[in-house]
Length: 449
Image 1 (cartoon, rainbow, N blue to C red):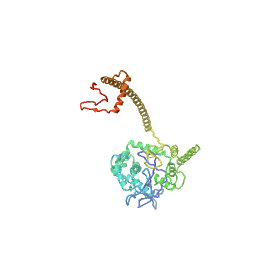
Image 2 (cartoon, one colour):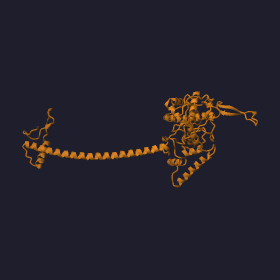
Image 3 (spheres, helix red, strand yellow):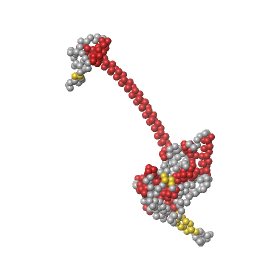
Image 4 (cartoon, rainbow, N blue to C red):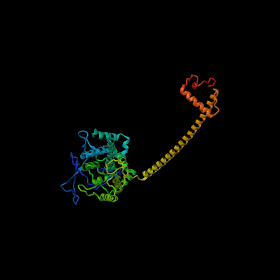
């Protein structure tokens, strides 16, 4: 059965998917075009003999392309670059991405990690094929192209890992420790050479340890969701059309964790989370806190369900990261947290050193300014003294008696009056370093050199 789970929880690289008691919506995945295979099952009697008549069980076969058959498809996109409508088109688009993820020419199962495709043109070729099926001509949609590209990458990564898990469960585990495990699966989508490398990778102790850890972690899961073929973005869009506003993460949590057709939570863990959230609301109401404020809603979400981990954000859809949702509560564990603390400490020390250096520089500049001012004052006094001395010598050469400072000031005042009445004539020679103005009185004996 083909289904689409849009989860913001933590995932491991080689997750082993176990059977879950989740109700999926098959309303959009019916037998279109004879995609279901027929399997004949013959029950046996007590003697081990086959009885008649035989019972036929219908089994779903591989998905067939049912997307962009008549040209590029138009979809509605939210601000994160996730498709939100129309609902049936979103489901078909999701299945199309699943088909691409199983294409051995684009994403070979012989690679141990999806990030290896970043070093080649595999994802670029896949994105070009996806882009050809989408109508991105609308200006608003064109602005979201880079985000759409990243969300498609995230979904292809998820589908590719799920595909490898399916193959492992069906064709590797039953034949583990047997030479038969290298036999090519009876599936045309699997390349024989890639399968052999895939089995060799699965045989490695490192992979087996990862499988054991992932299996143990998944066994601790207590909370399921019932989105079926619908995505979180589609549910949020339908809620917005019905209520005239976008749902917050708690409203979406209640929509995605209830039994089909009822308001009853899907499991005990979901029921407890909803009850804890309502209790958190009542506590804040008793303290006259506005529980409709976005920051308070995020605070209660983190209080009940825990902080966001691994650069993933729950309640918005696959691929949404911390930087796209401001105001959320995040948690960094282990080495990352220690590194973050060291980084913050180093940044604080660097900032303190920069502030101290700035203070020292300001003090130095202030002292330099004061010293410069004193030097300028001393230079000015010295220049005035030299000027007075020179003027006295010049007056003596002209036969003017300036024995005291008062005589000098009176003589200067008289010259100033004469200058206003008689403009000076400037005599300048190219061989002279300075110009020598003619004085407003006769002084034929004065030496100008």
